[in-house]
Amino acid sequence: MPNSIHAKSPKIIAVANQKGGVGKTTTTINLAAGLVEQDNHVLVVDLDPQGNASTGLGVNLEDREFTTYDFLLDEVDLSDVVQQTDNDGMWIIPATVDLSSADIELINNEKRSFLLRDALRQPAMADLNLDYVLIDCPPSLNLLTVNAMIAAHSVLIPLQSEFFALEGLSQLINTVREVRQTANPKLRIEGVVLTMFDARNNLSQQVEQDARENLGDLVFETKIPRNVRVSEAPSFAQSVLKYDSTSKGAVAYRLLAKELIAKHLRVAA
Image (tube, rainbow, N blue to C red; front, side, top):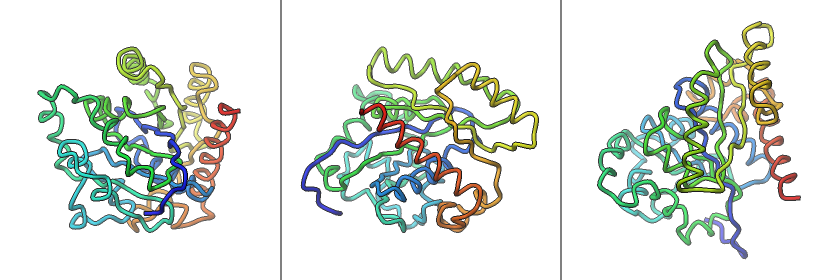
């Protein structure tokens, strides 16, 4: 782990949507890669029991000795659980199916909603000199997702460009509001990113129009196109930026990373 002369506080973003198949893990992996390309240090926290972010970043199942389960429930040190990926400047805390029992095991824990927040405050975090932490949430509004929202500064919502896309979004936004009122008053919505977008498809255009009318500036300008290279990349344990750097998917995620950074610079100014 690189040593940092001065500890900085990374921006922690929960990537969440209770609907499955909206490109949540894909967005986590490729946004992380885009941020690394812009000279940022990024930690991916795989909080989904399916462990797809871990697989997609090249962490084999047999190499996941310590996972987010241990990080949350057994208070394992960050140095034991974090793994370097093949991308310089990107680390991951991997997940396994063990995490699926966490909800039940946390029920009687008084600090059950704050475990991830507290774990990410370990002094060893400073050694990674991180700029961003991206949390890949499970496809449900369960206790793990609530942990992510309490630990995060903001929530990024991937929205698939399909019929009924906006249905369920109000439930997610209400959960963000509840967390803000009860446990994390600074939590905000980072934005909504349209995924699997097909410009030739009237439905995609209608979803974009509806999203922009209802959510305004919360919707990122960058849209992630439906792109076969994006779908292929995880089976090679790579981000699409590494797998096919010039593909439409790679270009889009690169633009999304730049848009996110620009937004943070404007807020900081």
